[in-house]
Image 1: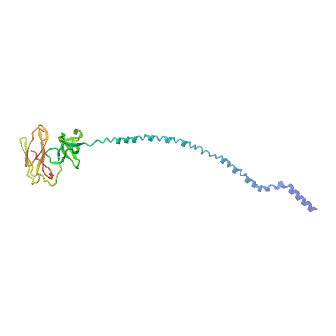
Image 2: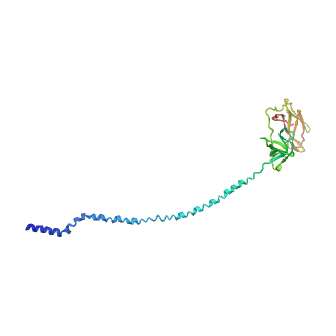
Image 3: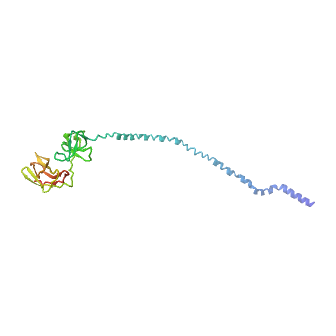
Length: 263
């Protein structure tokens, strides 16, 4: 009986003490994990409607009309400036036409030897003139060098006064010996120049190129002779004295010059 009483006491305690023993369930706060609402708090992150990127309303790209500003290249009409080259008003080269048979000489004077011959109607490039426009410096169409023609014997394609004045030197042939013993003496206004004879050769002669006083002006005097002396008139009254040189020439060409010791 007592045993029954004890059991019933125990049963009663169990039934009525559930609330007291309940503290132990605090161990089962496994329900707290469900308190993961903190995780759901991240829902606020979902508010990351970082749709803010949408403000990249690339409509700014629509501002690409700026490229339309590139019409500035249309300013490239400047290239049309290159049209100016087309204005290549490349002037026709000046020429002369031979009026009949014309001798083209080594220098601008009849005293110089003939370097080339032009036939009637022949053309030559026109590249200069002498100081008084009586001789023209030309390059015959079938040569690679220049010579001189009398202006009166040809027809130029332009006004020769527009041409540059040209001064040339004679081409020297190394096999033609220079004159020896050149000297000069004066008798009043006469200057006599002498030299020794050069070795015999085909077409042998002597060329005298001098500047002398005449009427108060210095003038050029060009002579040829087969003798070994010549006399020039050299007046007084000029700003400077005369001068000159002598050359030997033959069929090969001209020698180097020898200066005249002007008296």
